[in-house]
Length: 439
Image (cartoon, rainbow, N blue to C red; front, side, top):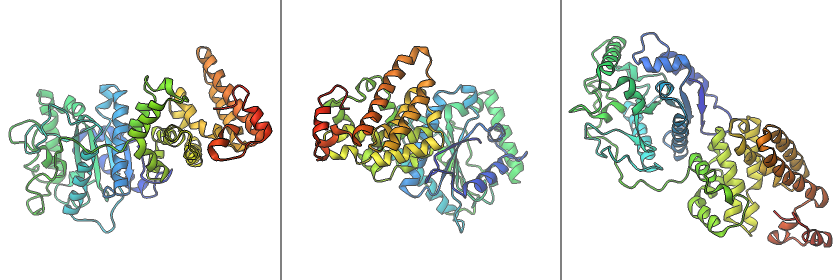
């Protein structure tokens, strides 16, 4: 597994993650591990990883939510052949002391319920909401997800024990069914996996493990499995509660980026249009406040997440609070997020036309040192454009240099004076009559 996504806190992978990762992948690498697809993905390092401190907190659950949305977005750009061996593993911080089977299951179903309640997309029309149906499947992001849970408390069915961590394995069902579906080849593959599981665990395969869509099958029984007949705390009914109208999403990096970079929104960047400002306020007001409060700092762990957070702090605030001092209150936070992202080369991981939004917080600063960095970053960015985009790059550089020139001359942006309650000097008043004096 090589693609690391969204650790919960801070800008680096947490200390506990490396040993947990080695333990999980060490088990998956065993020649006798039952799931041949997991072994193949592990060997090819083709999977995605999400590390989370806890799946019991809203922050942790939202971390997983964002990781799944980012993962699904990547799969949309990935060939079906490669996507087949491209699962997402969510690895939780090991609990000390370890929990009981019941407690791990409660954590797992709590996460699945949270994901459903905060799903940005409607439940697929062709999938029933009742888990007591043989054709039910957990869904998120508008697709069916093949999901299973492993935990340290599984001592009988040990193929669901990947070490000291609670681990979720997820993959679109359509990808899994492509190689393990209900056809001759798929049945052969599943029979082989079950035979391997029996050998690995030293006993017959758990009786509740069925085949999706077949009469009597209950998919939820296979997600967080019973560990033998002595597991008396196993729920009699599925803990999942279907909601026909999921709770309103509080936003995600994917939602922010899809909105901001849509063909409809692009022409409205850097322009004052009341209807557009109102739309951002209504749709993303709670996201902006959460970002300002630091509740979305975990977004900064991935390139797309960091870009979305920077846009929320540096752009959405200007739209929402246009003409108010609050339009600039998050500028310092935006620079901090952007600076950390650039240090980790997140800016180089996004398309070139999106990269400027990592640099704009420095252009917006009234500190000359930030302006110098803005010129440095944008100059490097401009050089990466080919001849067909040179005019666009030159236009951006004009404004970058103009911002620095104003700060060199006045030490502040005179056009902000009225909004911030600052008294303008005579030279600033005269300057504001010139072209390109306000932005």
